[in-house]
Image (cartoon, rainbow, N blue to C red):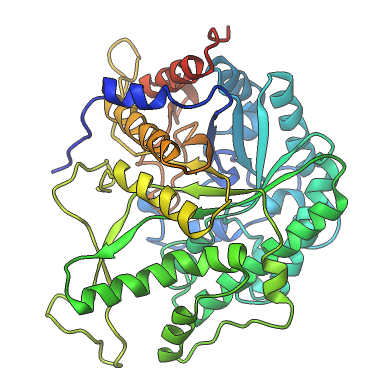
Length: 473
């Protein structure tokens, strides 16, 4: 039985009101999830176009062919963003649209769309924050080996430079990658995301080459910069404690932390991979394919760490039958829910307190790292009432609790500079298709009508209150 979070409280408001007036408020989207127009103006298939055609890969057989039709409705969507009074819009660039073959020259029509998008945002006083890669690798590069192949990192750096060449005169904030964990592990190990692989070795290679592509892109953008840059990478992060105090569970929590947290932050922020992770991979006969100079490239300085947070898990070192090792002698690591907590529509536990602890942990372990919450949100089965209004009180309360958790982390020393809610629009939610709605704005897919929900009005009003400014008209 799905439950919901309690309503937003005065205590949340009191914490949120401690945020500084220059705290960044915005929303996030990604190209494949909203744009549609997948075969227009020279765009070629990405791995997600291909994955959507695999029977059973996506709920209800949904695909991104139309999505929110943002490609054709972009000016109206930007006007809606402006009406919500938000100062930052994080979007992603479709590699297949800008560089259709994953190599070679830029596609004028493809980059032209993002050129117009940036101009529309700036004209409305909204800061554009492009993400260069949000999981939609051109299929031609996948056919050539994809992220498990080292060459893809160099192709990504070339593509990043192409985008920057066109937009860099107006864009200051850039994110290289969104959630390498999902690209590598969900896509190459667990098989639930594109390209649908099931190989731990491929997943480990993909992680390293994603990191390498990030570092190469950072260096390219720095050298080509025509204005001050704020360069970021975004990671999906959470906490991972032991399910019990048993030695097996404590060791499972360490393994989960190494593979799901430090594997991603240590090379970028410390210039090395965790030794305990390297030792864990030896059990599987796997080595991280590091070559000379890679770690220095990967650790090229960034300005901001993007943090995507949805939930945390507990780790168990035994399977359902009590065994601590599988048939191949590999130690068991199981992720378990905490239990007894409110749930979102996806059955994800609502855990704002863990967001505070996560941000404090990053501040403690990687001191001097500015952060922005680049995604945080929840799916709920909210629907318009008879008057057409979407009274998504559960999502509103979720956002309030998590923004208050960010404010609490700031009061305790975490350098968090902004909060970008996921997501601006209901959209194609990857393997969940269109059934799960994360949007602050409802999309009626048959008509493509946009309906701002209560949560959108709440974020608008909260941003205005924190800024101490009158709402935009």
